Image (tube, rainbow, N blue to C red; front, side, top):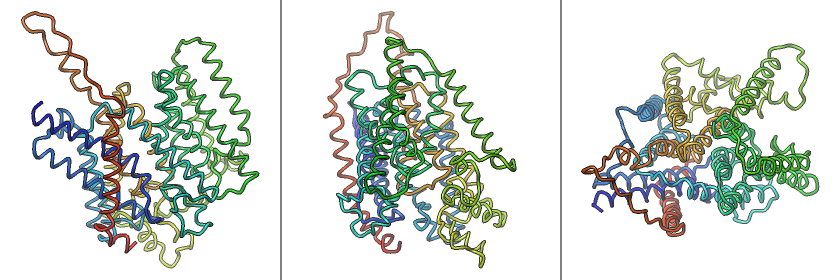
Amino acid sequence: MTQSQQLRKLAARSATAFLLAALCVFPLYIDKFSNLGVVKFTGICTLSWAFALWLGALACVGARPDPGRLPWKADPALWALGAVTASGVVSTVLSLSPGASFWGLGGYYGGCMMVLFTAAGYLAVRAFAPQKILNGLTFCVGVTTALVTVLYVLNIFNIDLIGTYANTAVVERAQFFSTLGQKNFCSGFMAFALPLVFYAFLVARGPRHTVFYGIPAFFGGLALAVVDAEGLMLGVGVAALVLICQKNFTTRTLRRLAVIGAFFFFHAGWMQYMRTHVYTQGGKPMLAALGHVAQRGFVVCLVVWAALYFGLRGRELPLYRPGRVLAGGIVAGAAVLTLLANCVPGFPSLGRLDDVLIFNDNWGTYRGTAWRITVESWLAQPVWRKLLGVGPGMMHTAVADWAGAGITDRMKTFYAAHNEYLELLLTTGAAGLAAWLWFVIAHLRRAAQNWLRPGVAPVTLALVSYLAHAVISIRVSMIFPEIMLLFALLQVFCLPEKGDAAAEKAPAKHGKKAKPDAPADHPGLARQWLPPILAAVVMMAVCGAASRVIFGFCTERF
């Protein structure tokens, strides 16, 4: 093995440790609680720069990415990344407060600094992340999901085992759960983690792998039943609609979905009992209303599973055509009901669905107000600010300037638009929003062209879930870095596996039949994954401690 190959192998292991640290260890990183996630922001910022600089140093001494990893001239995703970064820098320079926009902490976002370190992390992962990483990474994400969910549930019952909320009033703890902090931040993590966890269970083969990925899926069902955020329901729902439209959606997939449904109804019924007979705190998610019919739902799921398992006797039939009809019907029905509820006077009430279908200032816990003032603030800006924005994290300032003496107490509570796309429109302008949409479309288009390649489907579903979740939620500094790494990982999975093309093109020498390659020596799971997991834990601990020194001024200011 040449020196260049050794360096490339070291870079691949480092990229694996970086992904584990960001996706699996960072969500469990606990420090002084902060509503705005300042401590968590500085921790992931330090972690990302440390790994990006390390991988950059390896590249400088000879670790070259494989061909096709960073094709600057031909890849629109890389050009879109450049546009996103440039729009963030320009909007920061022209911001209402350039210093605050550089960090962006007052508005949850992380500002220009987050744009820069997530771009660096994206490039590092695209350059060196190994392709055969999905199974182990997904299981580790599942373990993290289970731990976050358990901590969330314990805090619902006012049990704080780890002391995260020791100095927080109980009434405030009703809104702030788990190691991720605020409940909407938790929903952002679950929005991308649950599709990864559930998909691994859907495609698992054999008893060992089914149990291996079934345990995280069981806790994923608990997360759906307890996380009080409509954005999570929207994200997972949209990902499910995308899944049933794909050609690899079969009766076997539906059978596993029935098992996940049974997990959910089991937990929803349990939580309904606990809410009725035992003290709980915090809000009640919309999906939790199904706890009233949990027994019937659980039985229906078991009947569906049994009918498919025993009725088909191992046969696997495609269901993508009825799946597409169902998805189209759901989307069309939702669109028609929304138009009728909002545009037809005297349209009959649909009960609790009115809270979802009828848009006004009170919609979505006053998200309607946030959306309206964000759009009206953008419309009030001069043309050049409509194009380039008021600066990251400046939503509250821009709204205060626009409203003037007419600002209400409700308006004063919003430091984010609770819609990632409207927030980008106001803070980075039409140019920034266009750049982000270009970036997203370039990746999803590539994913659609390579859906059946290993790893593409689950990562795409995770990203689709997050992007739908972003319609009614906020981009926060403790979630967005993971999303950018998933975008990078998606590009890695879309590439042909290393050696495939060469094997097809290589002719046999002198007319002789080429000898098959010797089987690779695959290390055991523990030997393969324990070193990067330990490296991820150590690096998160080191970077978390270092961040308090490097970015101490941030934690003191905010």
